[in-house]
Image (cartoon, rainbow, N blue to C red; front, side, top):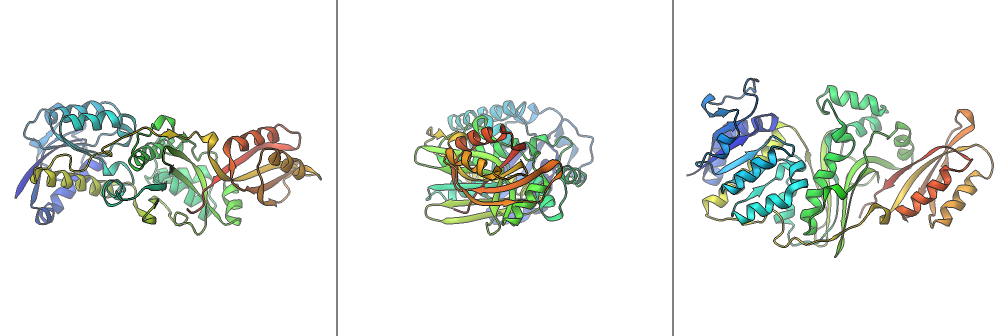
Length: 432
């Protein structure tokens, strides 16, 4: 039986889940792998809070350096999140020749190249399954099971908070603010939910997925990001009448020398595999040139799902140690190139547009003339009920058009005398 000694930095929700998993499931993990996992040190700034898991007090410390400087440890598990001091801890562990497991999407999306290069130089591994999609094995699948495929596209619901809010708005006609308040009350949203609802969390996860899938590094700061706080129940209802469901999607598409990467509210057809992904669940819809369509689905956050992914990474590294294998599978592809990140202005998509116009003859003709002048054609138009102050909603779906052209047309339309409010734009993603 090979013994592997672990040091944890971070004993919060995920950290206690990892400890609980190893205590409860360690014996059958050992039976399956021939590896005995031993938690040797745990560092956290708060050792007072009751975590409802039995740990020998002598293993606990408030000083992360006691983990980093312990030469008996094989693997350091970083679970504190954020950029600093997590970056410094991870780099220190790698430079001391320790393997690292992390769930830190913010750190990897911003400093992944530095971290992976440091691991390469020092001949150790960095694994990070829990950084995207909770217990969904998407990282491992991209690195291993799907390695024979050119990835054509990835569409992901990767933020449970947003998916819960949009599900409640869709199914129960709740307002955004009411759904957000409920998500907070149930523990699905942070006290400050802006990181989730503005799309930042999804963009960080997309940067990791797109980098893996494209054999290049996708800069998180250059991903187009749009959140969900402006979404109204009205547009969700209108879109449903047309057969669409609204989701916050992390979208990546891949060509020989280019990558698209964007996060925004998106309408998907009711028969799309992502349409039925509800509540706090995550899902990643993948299209490969040999596999065709696949969908990965599961719990995207929480103590147990994240702990499952972290312990899986620990076991993978432990197997490498047992067999004296290093860098058996690279954290990123062996050759990481540079591909052009397509700006949002160049993206072609279909669009849902809701105009609020004065109720008089010729208005729709005026709008379609401006759209046509910008090479935008409509596939469907619906005039909704009359509104106060002589304003009428007109909902239109376009054929595929260039984003820059759509923005230009809407700027002209919204500045005209016939429009009473700014036009609502939501992109549509069809099934590949």
